[in-house]
Length: 387
Image (cartoon, rainbow, N blue to C red):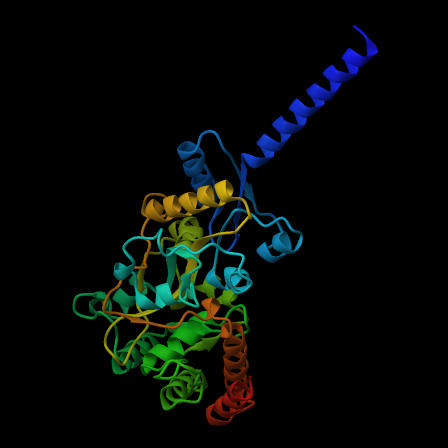
């Protein structure tokens, strides 16, 4: 073969290989899964579901120590991201996410607060997959010993009123049992305390018109003072941390734990069984007399890659995950009901600031450094000064 012919063949072969490599790259769809959003098995199941639906495409899960922001800033944005609305909101604001409102059916059956957390400028930037609900857990044996088993009848007591919660705490105290432990809150471990302080007297961090935050309302002040009074009267105890409070509850040393979820129950299943402890979940006490929903959201969003075919596949995949979520995640917890749904701080752009200010205020009160009135007034002043 002549040199010219050999060169032509090599050029053609190189072109074919480059085209094949390009096609292979186009057939890879990256799916970012936040560690906080899904456990390893759930994430793997999501990838398997997509792979089974689109067999000619490689679905690659990207997780590890790098968060979504790192991937995007490295110009390696995934085609799909399964995470919290807060993690995705920044990219919705930048116009990098594809709108999903025409892809998600049954929106009227979704709780409005859940849907609102996934909307920006009338565009649904995320499809909600699951709401991880937070509640209290009780040691049923300790309740029985204190003659309080009847208080666990959800038909009779859908949610304890403040007076009933007070009765439970007093009866446990008289039985020489610590009702529950709290901890000094910080930005990472304040969600349960937020829920308890808001729910007990039907308060809310969001003002009635939902256009601003209001931490210094009468209801929040009353809830914070109530919690601090319990601590000062030694009817509840102060733990070093949330982890210490959880460990004592799992060992059967306290009657209630105020930061319980399905994930926590699964993580502590073996330890509870080893210690012979049976647990029942109960809503936070509420002056409204109905359950209060405290929750964190997990959803899926699709990034605009600039490629029409790839975008179309990303939208179809997001729709598939939404449609099949109940099959691979179990109970979704996003359906509309008659409960009181709190504002999900982790889904709001100012939520981290509100959480930080509340945690600082409550920590000051519980440590005796400030009164509830002064601490909340300072927190509100800081909020009002925000642009």
